[in-house]
Length: 200
Length: 280
Image (cartoon, rainbow over all chains, first blue to last red; front, side):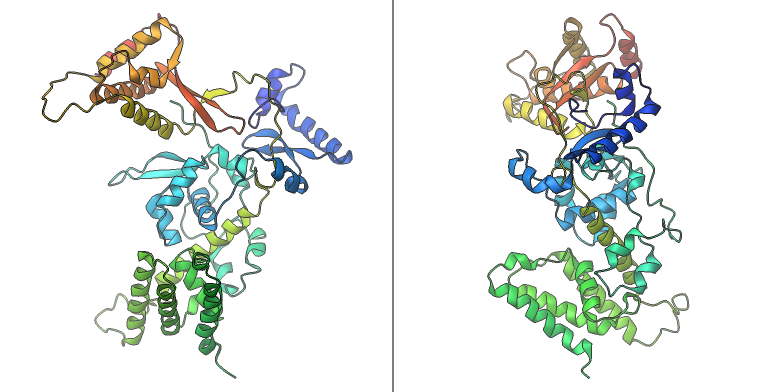
């Protein structure tokens, strides 16, 4: 895990370790994490983007930021909103993103593509063959998600109308939301697509 | 007891001008767009999003736009479109129901706007929620040892390849590739198929070569047409799985460095040639 530059899949760990098969990897990782917690280590193993990665504990971020050599991650509200729309509605066209957010999305999409948080997933087979966007593997890594299904549930429309006046509680309430049982359109809000790399 | 709706515009104006006085006009662009601004106004008015007092909100909305103008903020076109939408809804609400429009009877002219607002609101909320996660390179940092040769893991097939490829082609076009002067008429007979064969020939003697070297070719007088044809040839060969495109990744897992073109299978494997012939 230390030598790998990206999350390493259980199958690869097992391939390197003859004594261990992929199904055992998770148990071993859990064991290691328990050990790290007990010894109050500064790191733990995360399951992200279909693999495992050794990461620092959040409480050490203020120190690590000072020695950070890479550009710190900054995501504007516009970037986060756009990412959210793409994550829950993918594959999605630029026009669809703009319709939901009510503003031009060109610059934000370019910036997200540059940062490899989203990818072009092909074309929609309609007039004009617009490009469709999807989230990338990097998106899962940055947001610490093992898979897309681990995204928090979108709040149901009905729940929104009731307390639209209370912003403060809005995001907290979202966490307890049911997995959209009353979703009107049939678009699955949490598509269970794995972000498979495009093979050339 | 003053109507809260009466006070709202003043409160907004104060909030805005106080920031304006500090000279940071840019900071005023706190709204992510007209939908965000509308949600804000609805909260200020303490009304239900499903029952918007449209005349009041439309008026406040326009006051906001006026304020933005005074503060010399650029008002994006979307804000004006929304202003027009609000005006339209307002007029529809004022008009007595049109008896001839039976189909629309009972349909609240606000319905579509309300649906959009609710939809936007849930994405805004979930965006804030995912923004609070422990994000890589902000809250948590991945541990990785340097100095270990990470091959073959470091070179994997690229995931977001299109832009890197186009970038590489742009560089190749900038380097060579005179466009063929305007007054000269050259008849070039370059075919993609020809370039495909040339690329495979280059790769016959070597396992791999750099993508940009292939585009640069060996002729100093490389024309744009040749570069473009070669680029298309490489894409086609990749699709036919005769070659693969690889790029190294840096320690953050971001593809970086030169793109390599690699032959798939043996040099003697001529299956790809058959596929080329079949296709072209």
